[in-house]
Picture 1: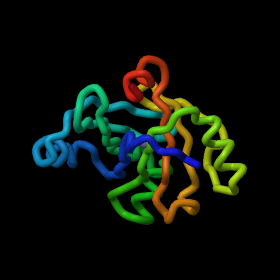
Picture 2: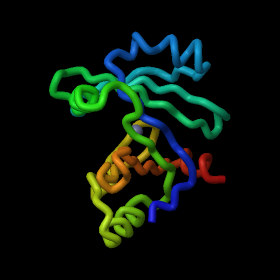
Picture 3: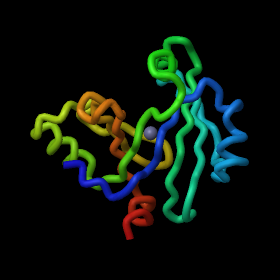
Amino acid sequence: MIRAQGVNHIGIAVKSIDAQRAFYENVLGARFEGVETVAEQKVRVAFYALGPESNPVRLEILEPTAPDSPIAGFIEKRGEGLHHVAYTVSDLPARLAELKAGGVRLIDEAPRSGAHHTRIAFVHPKASMGVLTELCEPMGEHAARNHP
Ligand code: ZN
């Protein structure tokens, strides 16, 4: 079982972060936290935070940096919009082992490192009604702060 403790963040695919910033900053009123390029994934990511600063829900705005980026493929097939929902979990390796034992299709059978001091893994979208599901475990002091 995933045993989700909350929504950690929501990933949204866009053609251009710069073209969408006005919406997130001026319409939604989210706090801009910065932009990161993840070269190996061929993606640029803008982070926004909503809610309490001690335990925010984040938005990851994902922009492809190359035509063969997975995000470019997603936008081509499905258009801009919701890309994934990330749930906060604890003990990610145990969650993955449980899901695998239960026959749930996984993209990642072992955790990898994510942004903001987390480790993450993806469940296959075929296992979750086409919405890509990310499991996200805050690490170190962030874990303590997120799970008082
Ligand atoms: Zn994510």
